[in-house]
Image 1 (cartoon, rainbow, N blue to C red):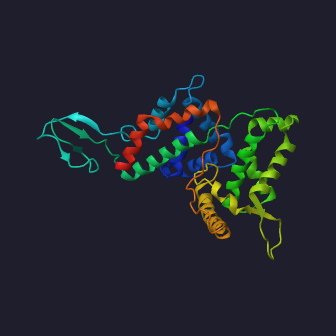
Image 2 (image 1 turned 180 degrees about the vertical axis):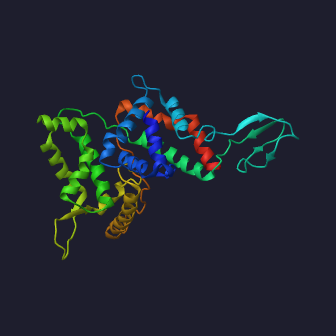
Image 3 (image 1 turned 90 degrees about the vertical axis):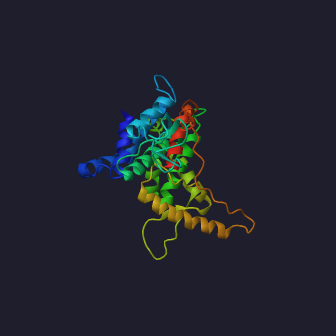
Length: 312
């Protein structure tokens, strides 16, 4: 099942299966890292989104959420306290819901959900669960093109891929094009192989426009070598710290670069300009048929899972 692969990858990345050796770590790295992730994790993610949106024989948002909780071994943990009947003398009670056990008064008491035997695993599994859920509801397929010559979806996807690649580190022209190729869909690749209007020439022209818009050539100084491109400070607000095509180490470098670029942007701006910086960027545009996937965020069990993490 795609959910099993997604859950296993998240858990292996967090060193929960260390006894399986380096082979499992290597498989998880290839499964979730660009460019191989386009043929592995991204396709599994789309299948889960297809099922959650209720298309065709999809399970719907409620059943997909239940499966997510089950695959991450959080059944019975990410839920609200339950009201149970009990006697005043036999029930072990506490004065607050955050101290564990039972609490309340009268003939009924509130029973907190059980905790995992290893408290460290509870934090890691919960983090992996919410990370996967954010990917499912955020990284939805792009809207369909309005015509055969509409390349707006390709431009948006390429801009996002290239922006985060340049945020992580400066890249040469060939490296930037390799990073931008992650935005090409199967349709773009098939058009390119068949020589259609949306083929390789269209991809390259879009790449040149996007690179010119968000990138600038870095000063080489006394060093020799091919020119490299870095992100413009004006585009630093578009960085997403949860972008799923960058690894954690790449995000760490990107956050340092983005902080530097934002300082440059603020220092070069007007004195009366606003200095409110966004924590995350807005989610990308999604295909209308996949929008019901975001109903996962409005389920009562989702509210209970968030309350459980915040209270306990």
